[in-house]
Image 1: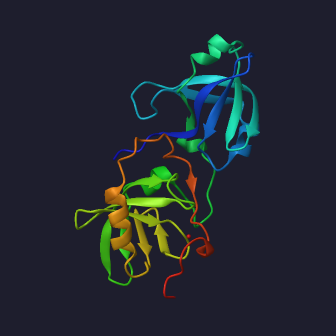
Image 2: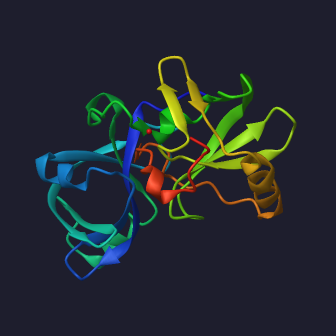
Length: 213
C-alpha cells in the first residue's frame, strides 16, 4: 500500500456559525500545533493525484474533540458549505516528531505483527480502529485467513520497529481467538480519514495484563 505524502489533521464536518467558520473532526494528537500554522491544505482525497489546495488559516479554537477553523476568503455560510467533507492536510515532511514508543497510523498500516512467544508472524495490519474500544485496536489480517483486533497497548508491546515495518507483541493466551471471533462478527466499517494521526500505545493499566508501547 503506497503511503500518501500528506498528513491529515482534521476532517471538515459542516459550517459553524454565520461568518464562514467550519467545525472539523480532529485527526491529530497535536491540536495545539494549529496555533503555529499560517497555511494548511484542503483536499477531497489526499491519496489522489489531484494536488491539495493551499489556504491561509486565519483562526482556530478547540471545542472538545473538534476544532473550529476559519480560512481567508471564507466569510459566509455558503462559502463554508463548499468546504464540507474536505480534509485539512499538511505535507508529510511537516508532521511533528514522535517519541520512541509512538507511531503514525499511516506507518502502522502494512506492518507485520509477530508473536514473541511463538516466534511466528500473526499477520499484517490493515487498519487501526479508534472507535470500537477505549483503546486503539490493530485490525490484522492473520496468516490463518481470519481477521483479528489486537489492543495497541504497552502491556502487549515488546518492540516497535517502524523502519523494518515489524511490531513484536506478547499476547495473553486466547486473546487472538476471542478477538478474531469478534472481528469476524462485526460489520465491515466504512474507511475513515484518520490514518495519519499519532498513535501511542496506551499504558498497561488500560488492558488485561499478560502473564508477565
